[in-house]
Length: 250
Image (cartoon, rainbow, N blue to C red):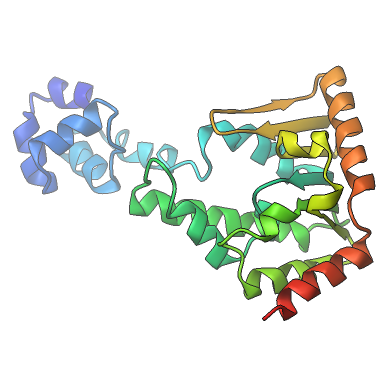
């Protein structure tokens, strides 16, 4: 945008006035600090006689729905034919209610701007269509540590959502109680998935970063750890009764 403006001998102040922005806002767009808006691009295109080349850039400026560190995983998730997911502190993203999602994202540290928060909330809820809309259906196995169920963000609606999902034919949901947890379960969340091309990936996420890998040794180790966690967890029927008791607690 700056190159076209300079070539057309249009000042930043002139472009700002035509687009109804401050010069500092135009400057931040030109420097990549702020995402250019469609209005700014259209105005610059007309004012700088770019013949549609600047306006055409609008199609390439869609905001990314997911944090950068999770984008590779989201792509693989869309291709998955099976997915095993263990969560130690949170309800798995595919099982979260809107209220739960909002509680997490709106309290993100550092804070997100309102637009980004709304996009992240919508994107997470949109991902959940994989539970029901894929043919043939994706095979899911979720194991949730009791600590995740006891968190302040989990309300009755969220517990009912877990029970609802657990009744789906393509979903297995297990609870790992406090008294059954051993060291592997305390190491944090873990996801294993297999794609349509039968590639197998392991995904781990922490406070400072995340890793998606197809390296055979890492996938094998993650499979062994997750398999052990599954054997320690309650059976699906026992898990449903465990959650039902939580719902019925005064």
